[in-house]
Image (tube, rainbow, N blue to C red; front, side, top):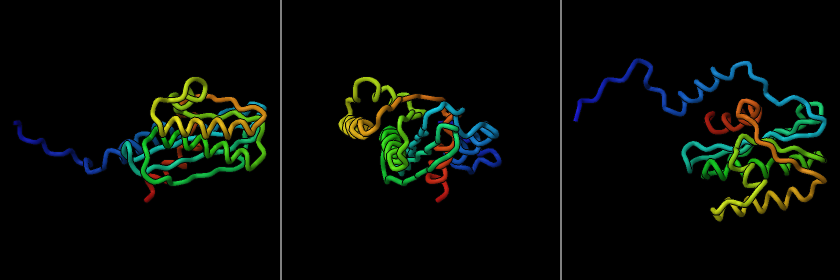
Length: 168
């Protein structure tokens, strides 16, 4: 066994803190919302510190002109990152329903969640139940479109989740 190397100066940050700092520097100046589309849309994001770990979800409702109508963020206790993403979509639908936003485009940076909503539900029982809840809630709207978009386009919701997870 080789001897352990000394830590570099400044190496006392936790991995999560380093990731957050790196992400913030990479995305400084990026737009916080996608361009207006003529329909209301909701940005959804969920995350956890650990997998599973303490988790939070957020949704930002944007009007057809791209202006923020409302937002919501919630700590959900211990959950997996995948469960947090699905629950964030459900929160987004509830937020849109409370503000009579219809038709609606639901945007998430989780390819897995969007694929599950467009195609077959996941095998995992907890995630499959969340997909059923999301689909039931979506039926209350005239039209809902599911859209994956890059993480950089999800900054408004992502920032709310980061603040909820890392500010404490």
